Amino acid sequence: MVMSPRLDLRQSQTLVMTPQLQQAIKLLQLSNLDLAAYVDQELERNPLLERSDAEPATQPVERPEERPDGAETVLLDLTPGSVDEAPVDQDFNTARDEDGPATSGWEEAAEGGFATASPWGPGGEGGAFEGEDPLERLAADGPTLREHIEAQIVLDLPAPADRLIAAHLLGMLDDAGYLIGTTAEAATALGCAQEEVERVLGRLQAMDPPGLFARSLRECLALQLADRNRLDPAMVALLDHLDVLARRDLASLRGLCGVDAEDLAEMIAEIRALDPKPALRFEHGLVQTLVPDVLMRPDPAGGWLVELNTETLPKVLVNNRYHARLAKGGGREVKTYLAETLASANWLVKALDQRANTILKVAVEIVRQQDAFFAHGIRHLKPLILRDIAEAIEMHESTVSRVTSNKTLASPRGIFELKYFFTQSVGGGANGEGHSAEAVRHRIKTLIDEERAEAVLSDDRIVEILKEEGIDIARRTVAKYRESMKIPSSVQRRRAKMNPSF
Image (cartoon, rainbow, N blue to C red; front, side, top):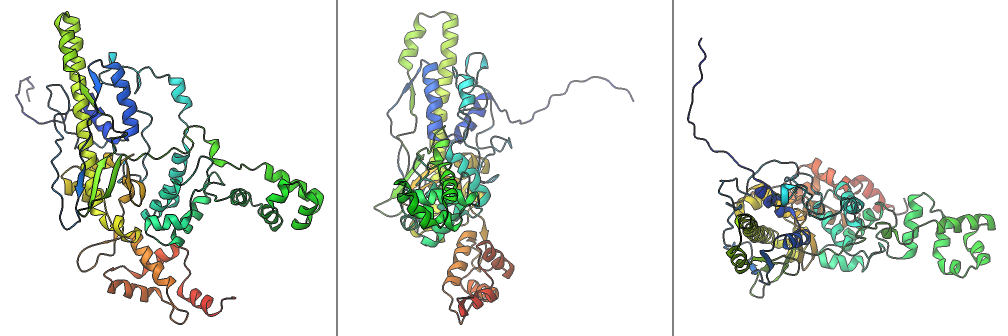
């Protein structure tokens, strides 16, 4: 066989990931506040950019029976260059780009900016924000209290509704780590039973650091002592009489606690070693106010009105007059520089506009599909996955994943991250519709709470009742959900109801 060189002409299609397109993808993942910090840096660096006071439009969301006709969002040709590139709405399966509800359920927040260098920065070098001191950034890399708690919530609270409740309670913390407001108020806002809020609160109070989510100083100290396995009856009595301790009436305390002077001194030393303000140990953004990226409110005409938060949304324009003035008497180097800055400015304006339209489009569809939750409460949380939203708005799942990362929605029921609204479907009925796993758990708990002592429901009977209501699940699923909620079996419940003192 003779080998010889030859030339072939072939035509093929390839995806080109330019630095500008990579940055466009990163823009989708940033919250409005993180994006504003980045835009501030661009305004300082690019003389052709200036702020704009333009207001984005509000988009109405009608009830699910009538889907709103939203304007299509163009996702192609984002970069100022002449090279044909892959659209933002494309699955590239990159490790950082895929952060979203489809992967971990609780993605890492935007890390103070971009992980890659600015593609239009001088020399293509430097960090996410030019002029930033690397040592200062390293010192600010510690997690905030919110990030610390959210990382534990994703591990300890797998149920979407529990995470919604936890997110609401997390927003009720003050700077010291105490819970502002009552569980009754939270239950009313979320449309669920107060017992559900109390249950989730108990799980939150068991998280690190101990003492968070307390409603009083006594409860804060008690949580820390319980974590150390030191909450004995004598210590409980001491906590019940902190006012006496404040007066330093040690003789009365010895009698109230039933201990001698030496034991009392040790107990007081333990109390002094506790942290009355456990949240203050987080120096970097103690309890940051959760600023929503998307706002929604009831529409007087029916349905909901959804809009981007104009207070935090950065808006910029290209100053073409200034560009024309500089270009008049400039030499070749000046014109080259102006061409680059103009292309960069035009690209940023276009990318910000597209990002806003994409976020609004995704948020509108989430609100439309979760209408029952916003109207009636957690029990009506609809099963939802990324594919449902992606197919409805004709985008790729990876785009929806990026959009829902680090974005929050302010609703009449509270402020929630967009990813909270994604939950698995179980128990599809004859109509082919599934039910949220948390809604099924809630229904099982309601049935058991309402059972009478002489008619305790077995798991088989619960399956029959749910099937009559259009929820078709197996007996083992009922048992699994019941056990996950720490509910005893029917035999144990019957014995406890028939003999309360047992």
